[in-house]
Length: 231
Image 1 (cartoon, rainbow, N blue to C red):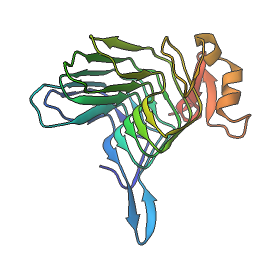
Image 2 (image 1 turned 90 degrees about the horizontal axis):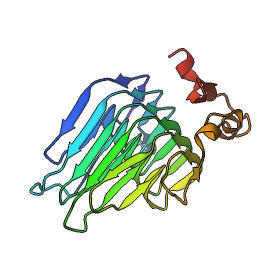
Image 3 (image 1 turned 45 degrees about the horizontal axis):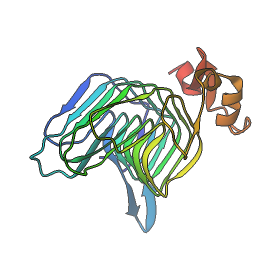
Image 4 (image 1 turned 90 degrees about the vertical axis):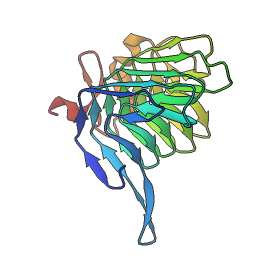
């Protein structure tokens, strides 16, 4: 768990949970806490996941809502300038699951992040348990996601599907601003783009808020974070 600052970290490898547990590439939970009477955010910045996350939920565990995120499972703090390039696979039994390219669940702030990783979910539950999957966040309650995009379609298997969207799976009052995705998913919170549109100078202009910052650059035909030119 993180209540401080994590900068410039990466994960390569595989993480597997087959007993109703959470997995994440950098840290499981990024908290916001009170310190000396002031709100203090855990911050994750300039991190990238290359690894593979797999969750297989059985029908007998006591867990109710578990999940996976390329960077973080649950974000209550601040995540900025992070990338997922790894694969995320989530298959549920009769428990709920939430998974996303950057975070499984978001109650905090995500800004200037993107997903290039494959996300696959399977839902064969015989109950009404939910599967929530998004290119950036699996689910969100309050919080915000800004200046983000996902470049991979989400693969859905099974007889039941719940909340599957390009940027955020299930959304409860999360502020979504200036976010984009490519794929067949339909989503009212973000803007669907053609692949060529995402790799344009116009998209860089949008992500940098009309050139107000230099966070984003165009690299190999797609938007990338400027720290990636040297990092």
